[in-house]
Length: 194
Image (cartoon, rainbow, N blue to C red; front, top):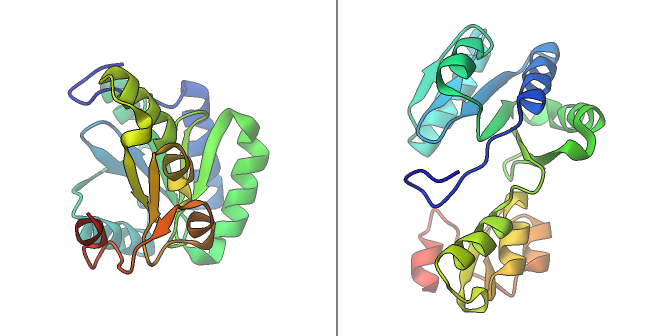
């Protein structure tokens, strides 16, 4: 689907509903990502703290809803991804429940920070996005450079002509990278490497 970006792909209705139900059963807050908006459904003070912290760290403005995204889904459509804000204490349990319930129908990722799980449609990853972008723009993928630090960057780094891991990357990212910078994202590692 083309919009102002080159392309995007939403979660299926079935995966979206299953993910939201599982998150609710586990007692966690979700973030529902659309192309230009993010919605969250915190239900208690601790969840408001988590979503506020995320908004502050990322500079992203969150919209709040209290109907488990029913209105958002009807009015705005299906999400590009759903993020479950479970915190480090519950991340292993959340990953296990999602993996057992969604199986191979979704792409389930643990965040580099360990405090959220991201759910995308199977086959949706930065690596495939890079491949598709190069095809759309008639670019040679071997002439691209990718930077990453988390599990969601693995395919991206592997498909690019040069894959560079940030200094603070997860071990799995450093293992697949062609190079590792001496700096983190917060230290302007991408700019300094280029």
